[in-house]
Image (cartoon, rainbow, N blue to C red):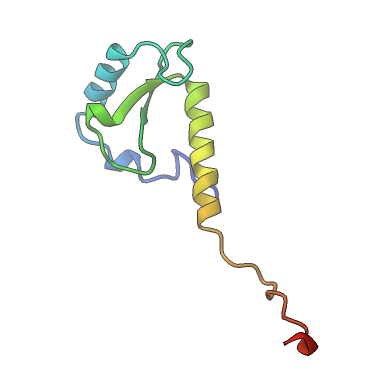
Amino acid sequence: MPSNWHTSTRKSRLPKDWERRRKEVLQLQPICMICGVRESTTVDHIIPMTDRHEPEDLQGVCEPCHRQKTAQEAAAFRAAAQKPGRKRPPEAHPGLR
């Protein structure tokens, strides 16, 4: 089952003053820190998969950039965690040993 905000435990791990921190980041960085064009509407953790909520670990981004960054991070995580396939590795020909 794919993980998303509704199935993630991330929300429960946010600090109690998250809304205040979120507003501060968006006020300090009103323009997306990734594309530099659109308005920041989302607060992104610069280092993925962490629970570091200090201002230096957060950045204001627009929704399209946040979706793209999150998708890239998730793809990299899945690629690194791939399980071995069911195929055996090719064996050397017995006459060539």
